[in-house]
Amino acid sequence: MSARLAILTGANGGVGRACAKKFADEGWSLVLVDIDASVVETAKQIAAAPGQVIVGIAADITQEAEVEKVVAAVKATGVAPRFLGLVAGVNQSASAVEDFDMAVWDRIMSINLRANVLMMRALIPSMKATGKASIATVSSFWGRAGHGYFSAYCASKAALISLTQSAAAELAPEIRVNSLAPGNIGTPMHYNALRDEATKRGISEKEMRDIEWAKIPMGKPADPAEMASALHFLATDDSSYMTGATLDVNGGCGFY
Ligand SMILES: NC(=O)c1ccc[n+]([C@@H]2O[C@H](COP(=O)([O-])OP(=O)(O)OC[C@H]3O[C@@H](n4cnc5c(N)ncnc54)[C@H](O)[C@@H]3O)[C@@H](O)[C@H]2O)c1
Image 1 (cartoon, helix red, strand yellow):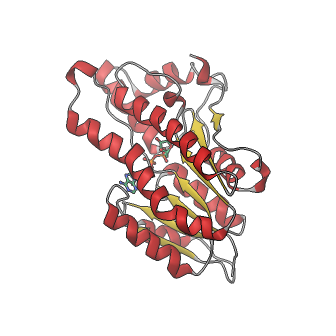
Image 2 (cartoon, rainbow, N blue to C red):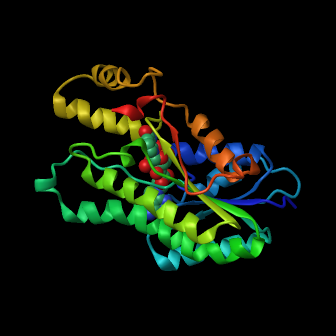
Image 3 (cartoon, rainbow, N blue to C red):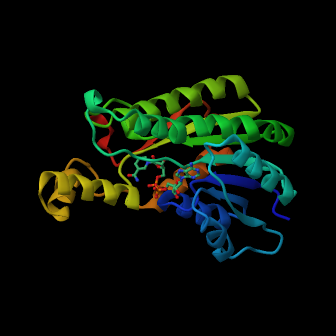
């Protein structure tokens, strides 16, 4: 049996799938969590080596009762949890603060922030029992500063960085807690945002893409696999002296 278990949320998304592949390739057992029920099939499609457990569980991690299903699935693997990767997150459509729909605000905060507290709260006891473990949140370069018309997303990710620091202070030295702050990543979240903005401006998707990508010193969004490598670094002893840190992996676009 693979002795290291990682729990990954948002595992059916662009970054989550890349992370699942990376961790599976590195020999981890996995509990893959997503609100999208096809995560169960996603887990089945990952080739497991003998003794490697890979399960998918459909759960809305904003709901305490659903988080308990994740805890049960973790226990059922019989493998000690060594890493909690909190990848799930949602973006918002552009909206001015003065017009903000508070139901949208609450939803963004619930998924990007509150759900991560629920997941930590539920899984920290078993990670403490493991003895040595790591947690990583996935924030954003947009959690480093506020950007116009994206107040809820930016505020949720800034708060997530702060939550990461608080949890790190409480849980050291047994459990390290860090955040990965990506820039643009070539996933549906990024391409949907480009499409929405292009429609709003009445320009083509390509024109919109050229405008946004010109702001990235590396000239293009990250491949999701590049996020998976960074998250795996935070999961392992390769980052053994890091806790409370936010790792910027943004192609150089974190400076504006
Ligand atoms: N894509 C980008 O450009 C970008 C940039 C910076 C940060 N990020 C962050 O990276 C993370 C992953 O982004 P992505 O591009 O893979 O997004 P994605 O939309 O492809 O994946 C997000 C996944 O989270 C799941 N999810 C949403 N709500 C959930 C809930 N309540 N319970 C369980 N699962 C839920 C979705 O079903 C989806 O599979 C997010 O936290 C995002 O904010 C993304």
